[in-house]
Image (cartoon, rainbow, N blue to C red):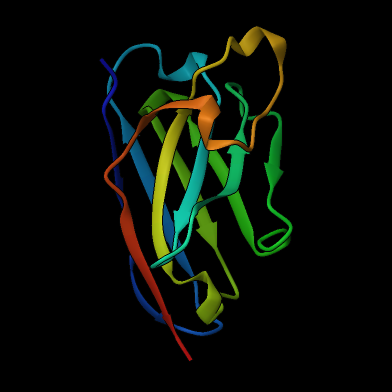
Length: 128
């Protein structure tokens, strides 16, 4: 069983920064790609960023490209999301998730249907 626990959310002014962390249990963490998603009130859960098992490949939603950076530390079983130049429209609950697919294919996924384990989420609020 895999457990994911997010932390680092909070309230920040527009233009500010936050770094989210997602700590994973289980020895297989380093074998899988990981992703970040977010869900604003009344909206669907949307893709934000994903990173390959090695950290060598990343992919971002257009809305966050150039502002957010996903990274991972396999020795610490942790994936991060550094968020800079935050905007009020970034306000949401942020979730990390594990990509269910065989990492040997090297494909990164943006659909939430490709992720099997999810954390409980951490709230990010950006005030204008």
